[in-house]
Length: 436
Image (cartoon, rainbow, N blue to C red; front, side, top):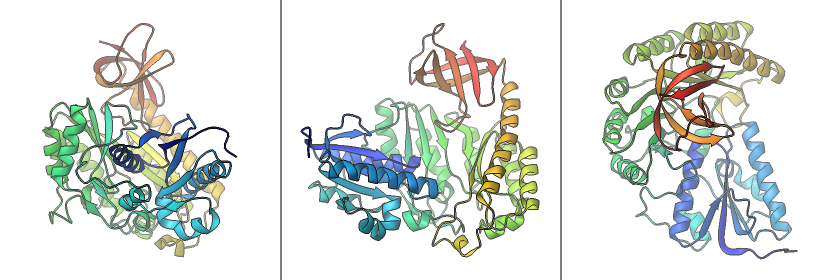
């Protein structure tokens, strides 16, 4: 039974998963606002009549979080606390028939490329003229820019192509227009995202055009930083590095998930690259862009990973000394190529191996941070938290990388401003600094 009145045209959008989902939610909310809906993102007001959940279906933990969130709002609908519940995103794309059967309280399920259909179900129209118009959920000084959808890579462990479909590049002129709109509203940092940035342009321009896109975005006035996320190592276009080196507003930062180094693992993972080529590529990147921060992601416990494979991975992490590194435990995903393999590494060993890698990286990160003490860096101020302003250097992406803490009792800074700071102290994953 309803205990309070709900605003009929108010929508609460809940986002789970990665930055690509954040971007999709922002586009969805921009469309809803243009259709005269009142929209909030993950609101605590509890007076929206409609809830839309944008789900993640990447690995087991993410799927469980999505299911738990759907069930939570299904109970709210049962209790009369919301009128309509809609589910979209990756989990919905992948498991729609099962979800419809198991959670009948959801009014509609939509996939990752069904935004017009979702809007139509609410009596709204998809407005094609809204290029670059979004409802930002990030702080106004930085935003994600999705340059393509889907993925054509054959990686054995990944279910993304099942949920996001084939690779589709977004035309360059649309991306530039979107960047101009964001810049006119005070954006300082643009973070390029895709399942595979380096594939950009192959479908619509018949060649890799990431470097050209970077140049055009770099020419947009008032954007201080442009950052690259999710580059695939096989077939990496080296002209990207030339643009990065030449353009001052393109961060010396590259997120390139390498996943493993053992040839046995790379072959089984269908990564299209060998240990030698991986090592040569990392060397080439660092030679072409001296001082670059290279972030990578690894997988622990992939089927068939032996102690020898893991020792090889550990030694490579020690010697390569990545500036930034994260690691996932392998998740056995149905309908992927690797699902045909025996998931033979016990969960406890997967977790132990991941922890060993992060212990190595923690030590490397501390040593690299200690080398920065006494140096001056440009930082972008993200927020105030407790007694500190929190900022980032060009070598750090929001949410996942190191932060720079500045004493708010001694100094006053504004969110979204760039400032010069001198590093005074280093910890494993944090730096302390004073404005110069």
